[in-house]
Image (tube, rainbow, N blue to C red; front, side, top):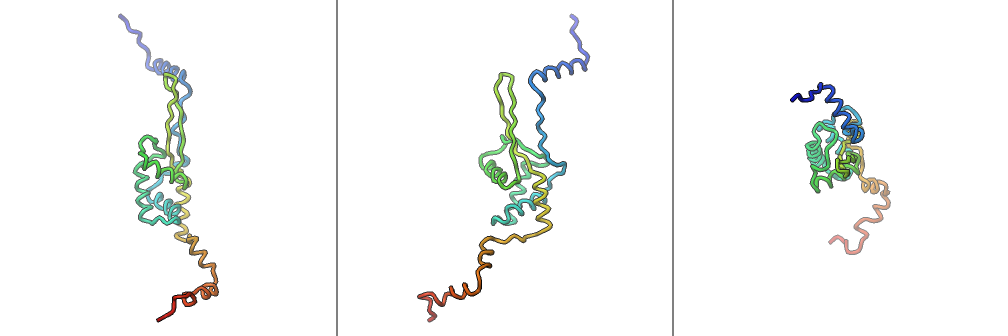
Length: 171
């Protein structure tokens, strides 16, 4: 007839003991490396700094920044499960460029199976550094080919002019 009524604090302690039986609580998500929030403008500047020297135009990097920030919003991380194959390819490219990083969490289920959760994390410090460097020193990177051509002396160009080639006579 009488139910064993527990004080709410006792009940909370019992639940905590049950949780401890499954291992320590996960430290995730502890992904942020700085408390600053990445703005869309900072992401645009960072992507221009990183990808601009590789021939990607400003409007394209702006679109990429919008695309990327639509996934993250105000968070530092997202779960890999929300990405499709094309999105994941873009994310791997951005990981190679130092904009993103990955981490994995392993959780044991009640049946003893392991469940892996993969995360994509913004490298906020690096993004802010790229953005600040870009804002301070705009467009001073030179294409490698342009710098090679600049190193060739005028005498080489004169010796290789079109007038000296056979079949290039002026009619």
